[in-house]
Structures are given as C-alpha cells and as structure tokens.
Image 1 (tube, rainbow, N blue to C red):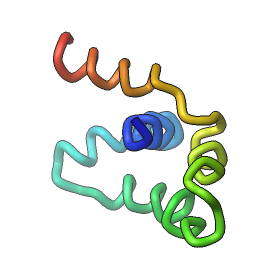
Image 2: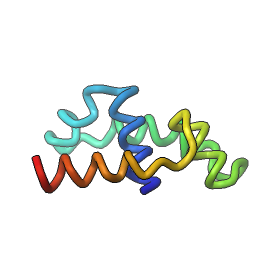
Image 3: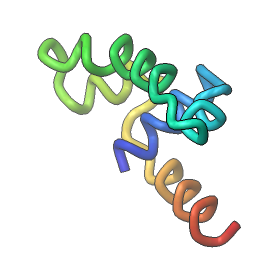
Length: 73
C-alpha cells in the first residue's frame, strides 16, 4: 500500500514519470524518490515519511486505485 501511495504522489508531482518508465528511463522516478524518500529515510519513521512524501497518512484508496488501473482498466 505504501508503494502505491508513493508512486501516486510521484506521478502527481512529475507527470512525465509514466512516459519515462515506458522508455526504460527511471531517472524522473528515482529523482523524486531520492528527494522525498531516500534522503529522509533514516530521519523519519515510516508513518511520518509517508505522510511527508505524499501529504497524507497511509491511505488504502491509493492501493485500490492501483489495482483498478492495473487489472480492471
């Protein structure tokens, strides 16, 4: 669930992430992760890191949206 929420936030912040991933280019996603997750991982709890990176606490709706988009679209 956390990964789905983080990816949703990354896509919202950097709209070209999906196109870049389709080309095999992980740089936009990795750049967002480095700034919002990797650089803060040792300073924050998982709960606080997720809230800071995504703007909200763990939310199952992000995972539900991922499942719907991936398997039902």
